[in-house]
Length: 293
Image (cartoon, rainbow, N blue to C red; front, side, top):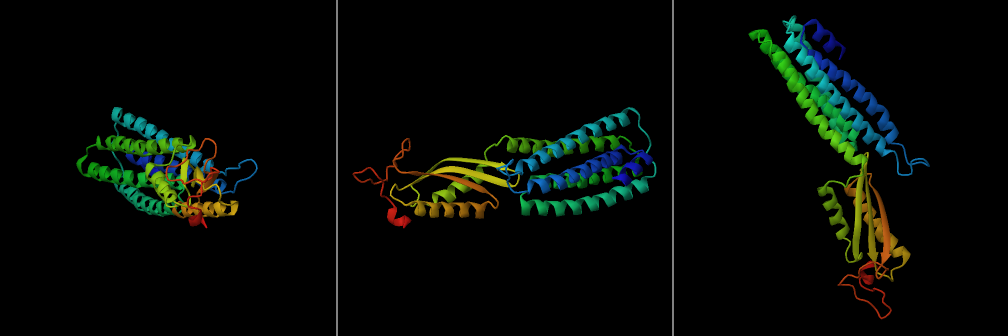
């Protein structure tokens, strides 16, 4: 960051200077992620009975907004150079600086992306996006600097700065939307909901019906909340055993997920009676009792 800012000013390159600003925000983003992930990983306590996962999501939102601010600043710097163009100086140093930055940024991106996949951490994922954006924009600046050095086309410098700003804004805005959705407890993606529904459906006929499935995400944790209808003559132990199995299946598919199940007997007030449910004269469902045992 320091080298890019210093060489960018020294060489009169708004593209390289923009990269320095971007790297400064990478540093801030990494610092935010470092502290918030430690907090988000703490277990639930009296003040946070549902855990601290939202801290990580809030961190992701702040990091993404920093990228938006960076893109605006880069555009402003680019406009200054359009109005008052300055010849590129010390091109060799500028090219060497941005080439080194490209290599380092891409290596750090790969490391962060792998960690994000392993932990399903939105904060680390945003941090990885910071470094991916850094690598991509560094490549653009490198091409522009080489082209300017050999052609003298100074308009390429602010032009590449505008492209960098547009790219950063695109990836950051997508993450802003994602973070806001998590903070407002938006339902999980349709593919994940479908996967969860498939797992729950596999428990028929032991579970007569599953309904009112509610899902959300908090940091790295997914939450599943639903009602399960069992045979009215099943014991508490029997229904509890099946619920444990359902939890295990969901947690195997979605590691770290939290599952809450409301058990209802067939014929419970307000609960529809499935067409396939056979009933005794007492009105209690005996379907599938044998399967549950």
